[in-house]
Length: 94
Image (tube, rainbow, N blue to C red; front, side, top):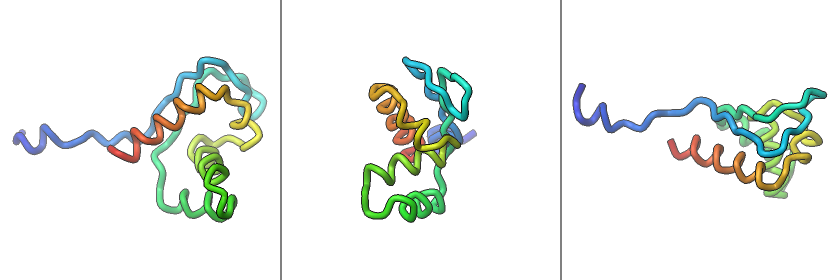
């Protein structure tokens, strides 16, 4: 294996976020969320759903990527929401 191949970044397809405070997703209590890597169409769909409200766009995007309803995601503890944001940033920079 060449040095260039060894230094290639590893692309993460999903991130599992361990929640400090469990929530209910689709009626099931969970202590973790799995977020998949975003595609361009995910950004476009979130934008269509939320209009120009950037905060709502992010929430809608995270709902798409975690396969949960906005009403479920809005129940996240704010510290856990920060973990979700960090997981997202890790995937899009990789």
